[in-house]
Length: 398
Image 1 (cartoon, rainbow, N blue to C red):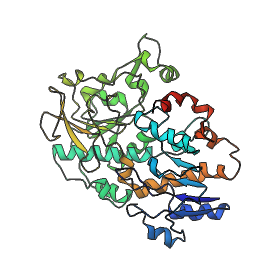
Image 2 (image 1 turned 90 degrees about the horizontal axis):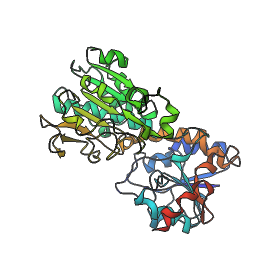
Image 3 (image 1 turned 30 degrees about the vertical axis):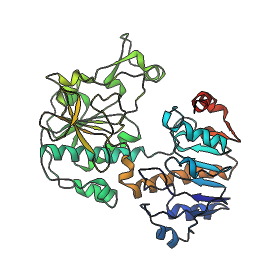
Image 4 (image 1 turned 120 degrees about the vertical axis):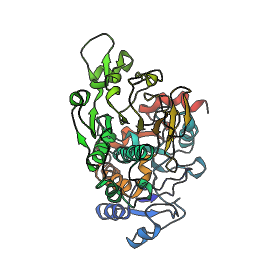
């Protein structure tokens, strides 16, 4: 089997890789396969690093059996009759990628979407931890820009995670910094690592609303910020089944917080955590929002648009409901970068590739005995697979 690492072609270009040189070497040592890399001038891991590890460069990947990237492969770069791994962003019927999935079907491609790789119950590969790591850091950095203090170096200018965390060492945080973090998944676990690296004290939700002295942070799970509309006891399975039967009780915490880090999963059927009307209330005390999940028109009403790595912050004017400079005294600061793991591409690639090597790639060589690849395969042999047959109308209208 010959495996090729493709050059990222989506704009803006992503600097991450699915497999580092060490991963490629390990894969070839474990299995009968060859790995080659398409040259790229923009990767965080350079062509020379692959060559130094004995991984050859190859521009034309048409003789490969399996092709692996990170983000969507441009339609004009797809090679027919191959197996592809990448994030396709199609299973939720995202309108901007319907043509991509149709092209994969038309080109007889077997498409395996990283986002759909599971052990039967939970995902086995993800960049979520790094979204949380960088998102929380950016929230603290934005807070510093707005309210003063020693500036923090942008994460994407740090060589790696260690240098980013060094920026947090010996920082002094003001007593009015009181942070709410939502979620209990990979994203929020990454944010927790950053908050602990910053030396900020943790407290329970009960202590938080009882007036815990800052700087301090607390973590809220779904039962803390959602309640059943019918007054029944909280049931997480019911929340997953039909979130429209719940309403937000986030405003119980909003008067006590000054920085909100949104790291929870959002279902479009779920209620907003707070509304734009809520944000105009006198007791809405939040001054800065780090929307790590970055769901536009989603649960965080101040997220009017995504921001970028180069320009990560903007302000939200609660009266005009418009974007302003985040430094404006009356504005609520917003950080809504939608590709946060790209700010630490080396570390993110190392973590992702390690998960791939352990949890996914063995299935290429053992007949997919646990159906890891089967569950994540959206199309093959010129058709959508049974699991994704519901996408037929989605690609038919293209």
